[in-house]
Image (cartoon, rainbow, N blue to C red; front, side, top):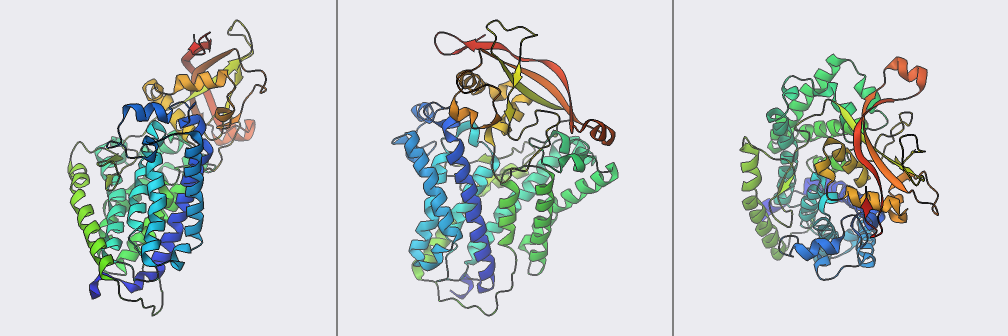
Length: 474
């Protein structure tokens, strides 16, 4: 079928595949380095406890058959190795069927991780990586030209990411309609980056321009993805520029980067007069069948986008094949942070020697400038932001975090920037307090060197110690 492939997108496919493999590498590396404290046998939300109550059909994962920390580590590091092989272009050296299998392996491994990841993996970019990774299986290698149907479905994902985010903003917080959300967002976003303070201090008229440009990019430009070239390339390029702006303004894990990767697939990059062999019949049949399935499953995210009760970041099937996306339907006006402290005193008092734990990414010491971590994902730091919004977000894991800190648990401490206690002297008590954080002014920054100013709000967790049972006790 002559219409089946689009040889002119050969270079776009190549760049897309290598970039997607790099995102996979970051995702698997994040899992390998953090899982023991979060999901391990002694983690805050252990996988065996989850698989005991949630069946395979609801959350398909190889860990339903067997779980051990060693097996999880093996899966994560195998995913890293497969991702590195794909970055190196090994799929281009294999027969078509073997290349498809090579792309299917990291998808299956990451699906197994996400489906047992619980709260730690309940982010929209997890489903976005899985949905994009599933389509990458059918994109082919140098034995065939890029399939038109798969290229279309990649644009369909990008459309839902952008348009869904635009709709949720217009339907959500009134500040998006008033063009005032960026008066607050750079200060209250989950994890500020090294330039976020400067973005916040931009003139308010420029913030209005930013919001207006965002609405255009998310609500109007996505429709141009389905127009002839060069309009589609111009639309994709504008989305890439917008995402790079967001990369500079904060730490949003790999959300911005995988959106950029999707936009690359819509670019008409010059590739000369490259020709490809005719696609085998079995491949055409498989791609057509997968495309029909995904288009059928798309009715659920479409209904969600059209609904006045639109929800963000939801999977409609356990394989995360077609999902709905969105971000920041509401924007906080005030930033709160949970500050965790410990003391060696046997009897905790207000004047005890309380020492603060420092997290890697979330604000803590007002004088410590935020760092750039994205696309690497600091899962605990992100969830601490949710915990500050409401204790209900932390109910499943915060007590376990306190218990691990009281034990000086090595894997948990590795998630932090610094523990104030030596390895052989764990704290006797842990407490948590809620503070309001705000960016300092230019004058305050010059005088104090602090980028944050914080004010005590209330007690979040009273002084807590390990009871004789090993569980935290107030």
